Length: 120
Image (cartoon, one colour):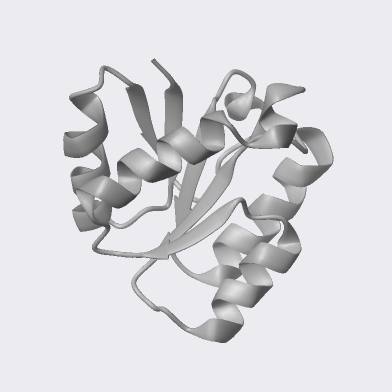
């Protein structure tokens, strides 16, 4: 069971993530984009969404304080530039909503086995 924090993820995508992952008994919290980094202290994975002007600065702060924390960007746009910007900034993965149930399970498995997460 993982502690998952959704930050600035739009309601439809957040609802979908919660429905799929709650079945596996993950603890899920939804937070606004202006979250304090301290709240992420015991998080196992972050899903962040919204506008890149919100999630990229957050990602930068997370990488400074929790470099191994899995961080997945969830957005409605599948723009190559946004994807590259997120990955180059240190995102673990990037996916566009709606997210398939199978994709969410794959993301959870991949982040559990993410090499740097195992050394945290």
